[in-house]
Image 1 (spheres, rainbow over the protein chains, first blue to last red):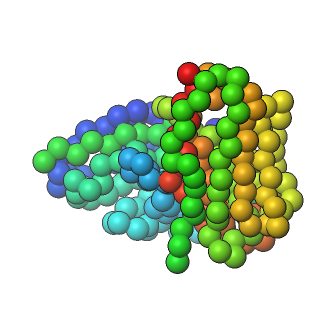
Image 2: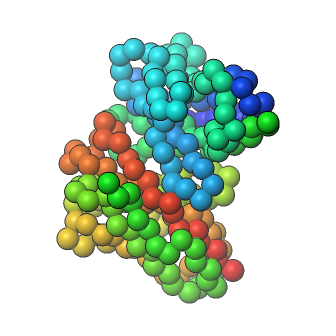
Amino acid sequence: AQSVTQPDIHITVSEGASLELRCNYSYGATPYLFWYVQSPGQGLQLLLKYFSGDTLVQGIKGFEAEFKRSQSSFNLRKPSVHWSDAAEYFCAGGGTSYGKLTFGQGTILTVHP
Amino acid sequence: EAGVAQSPRYKIIEKRQSVAFWCNPISGHATLYWYQQILGQGPKLLIQFQNNGVVDDSQLPKDRFSAERLKGVDSTLKIQPAKLEDSAVYLCASSSGTSGDYTDTQYFGPGTRLTVL
């Protein structure tokens, strides 16, 4: 079945440290992949998306993600985390350009000063 | 540019009561989505509209949930009667394209938090 999995429910990092949030997908063909961020009381905001082409995708707020077909992964990275990055992050995917987006269960990021 | 508006922001009801949520998408956006986000889970698509027509409602529990999008603009999601397991945040999103595919970024509203007692 097509699915998106985020193995880490909660991650804590210190401010200024690097960050990597994991996302694994299960799709037959090249999937359409997204990362969203949700701050408390707010809707989801798109950070970046991958459809095809360059496997390293740049997004907003200094985030990037790398599509690795061999590992079925689309991990989100940031070289230096700011306290304002504390939020919940969702990976989402689709098997074709139409149809339902499937979201992972989310990773809560806590940033220590 | 104004974002996606939703109301109410919070709602508490007793089980078996009915409730309705309202969504006003970004002006000019043809596609509108309703998602259900249960605590600890990612959003799940309930229904997708293209203008005022339904594109996908395969995950909408049609025995109790209904949705409409009159005139291809505002939309209302209704639950009647509500069950305890309907407690969740209901998110509305819209996108500009008429194709409804993923190249059109979805913009999300702040959501309505429903608690069913």
